[in-house]
Image (cartoon, rainbow, N blue to C red; front, side, top):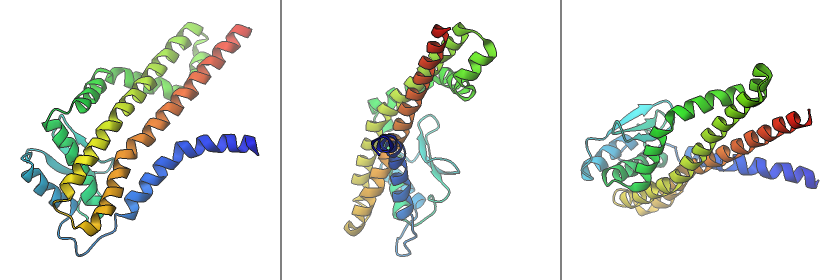
Length: 233
């Protein structure tokens, strides 16, 4: 029973944050017919009021995000033109990032710089991660090449962890800015719901950080086991 509990705890830590975030976003993404604006309509109004109308709001099939290089906010198709708490909250959260960009918020700039400087390492590390250390060793029969691949993969995953940890304060700050902005446009009765969605939006990267840490741990253990087997030979 204790062993079962030992295996369940990491599973819960790994998946619960992501499950909770998705639950909150879906729960409040229900159309409110009395809402006077969609997420995009409110977003454009906020951008104008905040004097950052050069930033555009665009539809995307993937994850919601703000691109500081293109000055574009990307919102998923199921939210962007919807009259829901999730829609207006997520759009305003991404506007929070645009405001950070405007005021040169240092953690945002640090994250962007780190992502740009480690882009090549990320791509190589991701490719090697897909192949896997055991496969690399089986194919090359070379401890040195396997060691080098392991170092690159660990460097890639360590960088991912660092970027995600830097991202956490960036996300919480964006949600804090968004909550203050929404209080100007949204009735008090809906602010509690907005706060829940903004908290979930900020915690999206917490779930990703946990996944990155677990992946780093797995690769490290795999790395150690391979070289233990080599030493025994």
